[in-house]
Image 1: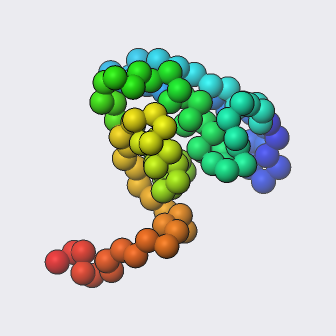
Image 2: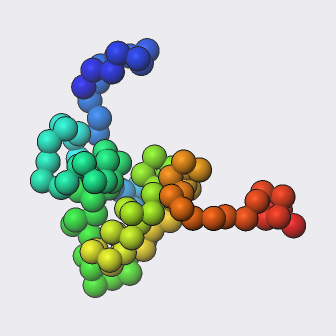
Length: 108
């Protein structure tokens, strides 16, 4: 992958799914092609869905991820399609129409 705006303009993107112990259970190398609909979920959603497909539905698993992968449509998809609970920090531009309390009100 070539990213002209970066200091190191080329490289390989490798995404992993690991447990609490740090053991890697699944790995995905980003190739811009795949079977999951990339256009609706974006790159972050695509990567997470690829890694979540092999998680068994029987046990209550929880997935934690950073703000690059967190948006409402993706969280709903994980819950509805894969029965996986998730938690992540969300960016303010990915809130959609959700209304949150102000920071000053939350600090009280």
